Amino acid sequence: MTSCTTIAHPSLAIIKYWGKESHGINIPAVPSLAITLSKLTTTTKVSLCTQADTVTIDGKPQAPDQSNRFFDYVREQTSPECHFKVESTNNFAAAAGLASSSSGFAALALAVSKLCNVSTDLNDISKLARIGSGSAARAVFGGFTSWNKGAESATQLFSPDFWPELRIIICTTISQKKTISSRAAMNQSAQTSPYYQAWIEQSHKLYTQAHKALSHKDLPLLGSLTRQSSMRMFGVMLSATPPILYWNPVSIALLKEIETLRTNGIEVWETMDAGPQIKCICLLPDVPVIVYALSKIIDTNNIVVDSVGTGVTFY
Ligand code: PMV
Image 1 (tube, rainbow, N blue to C red):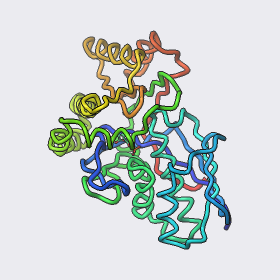
Image 2: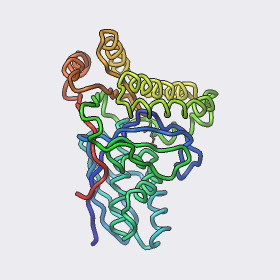
Image 3: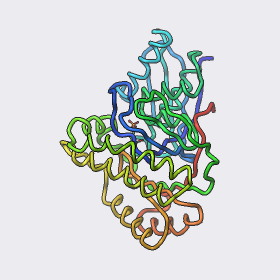
């Protein structure tokens, strides 16, 4: 076998991973909880080659520093001769705060492991994917996932069919590439925010509460914790030096609209990642009224109603 194609979906954190115990190999300083999405998809073809590694995403060549560490790690585990040609495509905006690196490295880890004849056990794939991007450790698994503080790999908490009515509404406010990567922003937060230690200290409690709320399918509680985790993460970013601000005016208009919906009794809860996009969790019957309200602010072409998806697979 000289080439292999895999597909994966982004991991949307409801309790955020923001901070590392160990830099370089992405060991998390906080526990996180996430949903693997379904419609947003990354398809990655990897071919063995003898020259330097090359990566294109949606046809655009990528700088080697994005994946060097990942490939070097693979070579340490396999053979120094192995090099890879990677062609990856997304059906959504890449590097814009929609967790494309989570699905990208999950897909890459499975394809590379298959090509190099190393273990394709999902725990091992999760461990490897994590080297490329922390959140990729979770995207390897479908359904609802957890990644503990200090852990080398993530785990599946509940399968994709655990909560069939749950929906995730994804609003893309702008598809431009972000100006600061999550890796750089995370390091800057840890090194300079006076609130970073408080963030680490509160994370376990938030995670435990969210885990319980999820197991009871308690949307109001889970939603409120989801919002808290994301806002607290931004509290850390905003208090970094220099401050990190991913939001744009459309993000704020959407946040306000979601707040109004809640005031009017609609159960909808927002979260954001390292980018200006808004994702909300809600239940299926409320989708039409929520999409109608959000479409007053952004075009419906930029709204995706998603559900819980499966983990990484071969194409
Ligand atoms: O794994 P990275 O480097 O893409 O960082 C992910 C950071 C967040 O998306 C903001 C949070 C998370 O848990 O996915």
